Image 1 (cartoon, helix red, strand yellow):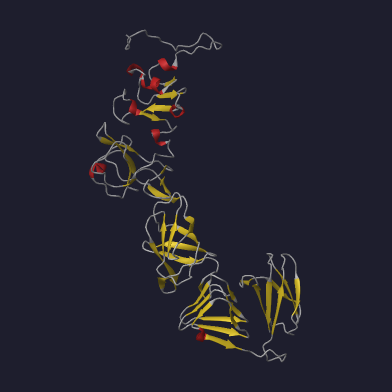
Image 2: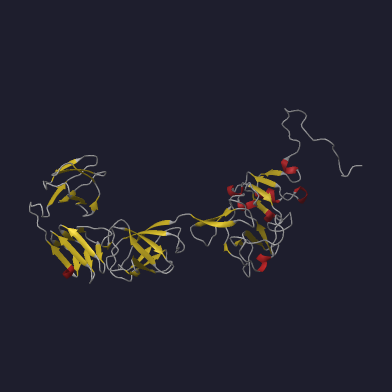
Length: 448
C-alpha cells in the first residue's frame, strides 16, 4: 500500500537518451534544491510550496549587479517563517551561512561576556575568547543544536528582533573574525569549541608616521586606518622640526595630545630642547600614559650611543651625569653639546671648535695633550683623508709610525660618525684599508 499521495513514480525521471538536452525538472519549479532566477524580486516571489530550509537560489540577471549572487534560505536567521525573505543569506560555501564559510565569519561589534541592555536587530558579539570566561544575562543561557547544554565562552551571538532572541555560531579551528572596536587586529580560533581559544593576530605592529608642529612643542599626525593608541605597537616617527621644550606632546588622528618622554637608565624624563630633530627617525612605545621616545641609529641622544667628532646642525649630544665623552682629535660643534653639571668631555690632542653651535657647562671640558715625538715612549698620531673611498678597492696607507701595535679608527668625514672598515696591518709602517660601501670622504686616524 502506497504511503504517499499524488502521481507516484517508482523509478527516476530521466531524459529518453543521453543526447536529449531537456532536464528531468526545471530548477525554478522544484521543491527546494537549487533554483536559478533572473532577479532578486523573482527570488523573493518563490512560493511557499517550493521553499525548503537550506535551499539555494542563484540570482544571475538583476540590474543591480551586487544582487547577483547565490543565497541560502537559513532557518532562524531572522525568523522561523520560510516566507520571510530576511532569512535569505549570502552563501559562503561553508557551514556558517553569510559568515563566509568555515574560515571567516562576519565582523562583531566587540568582545563581551554580557549582552547589552537594549540590543537591536543585527547586533553581533564575540562572547568571550575562551570557555573560562564567566557569562551573564542571556549569554549564559543560550544553546546551539551542535552542543549539549548551555554554551560556554567563545561563541558568536547575533540578535534577531523577529525572534526576540540571539542566534549562535560555534567557532571552528582556524576561523577568523574582525572585532570592530579592536584596532589593527584579527582574532583566530585554535582548537575545537569549548576547549579552544581565540588568539589576537596583529595586522601591523609597526606604524610609520610623519609629525609636524607649529610651535615646536605640540606635534600632530594625520593618517588613515588608525583609531586608538596601543601598547602593542611600535611607532616610527620623523619630526618635521626640532623640539624647543621639555613638555612636548603628540596627537595622532585627533585621539588626544599625549606627552612624550625620553628613556634613560633610571626611567623616563622630560625631553630637553632639540632632543628631537628632523634628520632622525625615532621609535616610540606607548606605555598607557606616555609615549617613550628612543632615537634610531645615532643622531641626538646620550653620549656613548654615537661617538662623533662633528655634531651637525640641528643635532644634540647629551653627556649625562657622571658620564664621560672621550675623543681623540678635534671636536666640531655645529649643533648642541649639552654637558651635565657632573658630566665631562675629554679631548686628547685636539681642540674644541664651536662653529655656530652651543655648548653647556663648557668648564667641564678637559683638554689633554700627549707627546707625539718619534721616541718609543711617546704617543704618535697619523691622519689622512681619502676622497672618495670606493667599495671593493684596497687603499694602502703609509703612516710611518714604525709599530705593529697601532690603533686604527675610520670616520665618515661628511657626517663625523665612526664607521667600520676592513684594516690589515701589512708592516710596521703600512696598513691596507677596504670598505663594503662607497663613501664620499673618509678620515683615517692611526695612533701608535
